[in-house]
Length: 304
Image 1 (cartoon, rainbow, N blue to C red):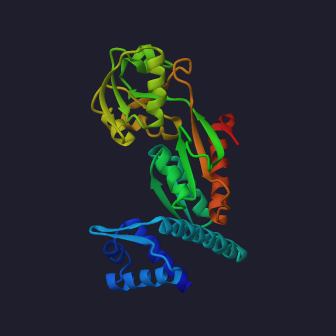
Image 2: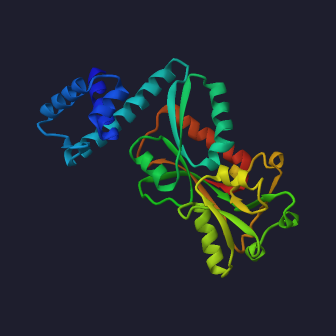
C-alpha cells in the first residue's frame, strides 16, 4: 500500500492547489511532499502540475492521472469492504452527498439504524445541492447522493425516486394555517421567504408563479432552509419545504400545508450513484436500506 500513499499525496495536492497546504494537511514537510511528486512525475515521464506563483494546478496529464487514481481508491475501498464482509462483520466507510432537507431527520435516523446493526461502518455526510452533489459522485468523493430536482448529468444512475409535494410552512396562527391546502393565489398579500434561485424548490415555485402570473412579496431569500424555518418563528411569513424535511414543526409553533398540485407540480427526490460504478458492500447495502426506509415512509410515491 506504500504506492497508494504516494497517490494519495498527489490527490491531496490536486484538491488543495498548493503543495504547502497539502503538506500541512498530510503532516509532512513541503520538501518531502514535493520530492514524492517529482518522483512520480519522473516515473511517468510527464509533469502532472503546472507550477504557478500562488500554488499548483493539474495539467491535462494530471487531470487524467488523478481521475485514474480516484477510481483506484474507490475500487480498493470496494474490495476491502468485500474482504471485511467475509469475516461476518461488515466494515466500510459510506460517503453521502445530500441537501439539508434529507440531512435534518431522514438520514440521521437511517444512519443510526444501519449502525445499530453494523457498528463497524462509518459515515461521511456532505451537505451540498444539485450539480455539486452530482460532481461529488463523478469525482468519487461521494458514494451515494440524495438530490431534489433536477438531475443534470447523464452518467448519474438513479436507483430510486420519491415524489415530494411542496408544502407551505407558516406560524400556527397564520391566516392560511386554517386551509387544508394552499393555492398560489392565496400567497398574494403575504410575506414570503424563498430559497435561492438554484434550489429545486425555488425553480418549481417560480414556474408555478410565472404560469399563474402571481405577484408575491418576497421579503427574504436564503440558501439555508434552517435559517428560513427559524425565521418564521419571529415573523408571520411563509416559507416552503418538502415532506422529507418537515419535522418538529409543532414544537416551534409552525405548521405545514401542501401546495395545490394544480398550481405547483410535485418535485422528485433522486437517490443515486455514479453510473457503472460497483459500490463497496457497505455503501450498496446502505443504499438498499435507504430505499426500504423511503418505501416505509412514502409507499407508492417511491419508484425504482
